[in-house]
Length: 138
Image (cartoon, rainbow, N blue to C red; front, top):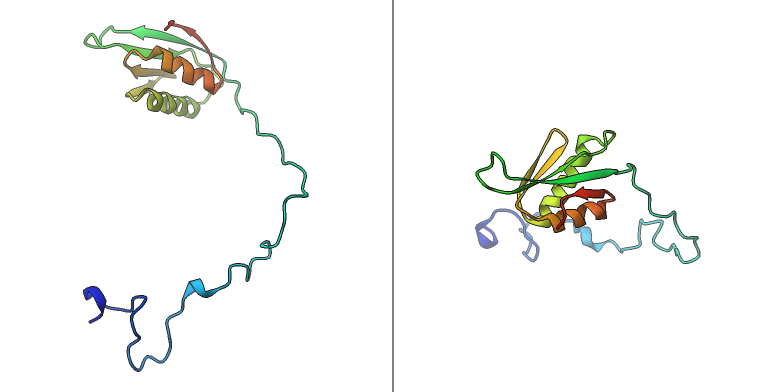
């Protein structure tokens, strides 16, 4: 039986007698051996390309405050997304808004419903994403 009640070899343990060879250690290879790019220097290279622009023109969205059929609870609805935006982009925006507000929400029929009355935070996140925001004022 070996150290800590486990079977097999652990680092720092002596080898069993009669095994004949030491275990292979992967950390004994010098860091530059086998790496053909280790000695390259990037200081003389021109700067890389600029950051890529957004693939989609985000367009304008409207905010709407709703309380109907919600037991008196307030939700902010983000609606009127551009028709060319796929649902996956809208879901990603909804996820960013939910995490920024620290609340729940959902995506229904290209509309995002965010729980609570966090108009200022929602507006800030949407503007940072590149949307022009209209509708409810803070």
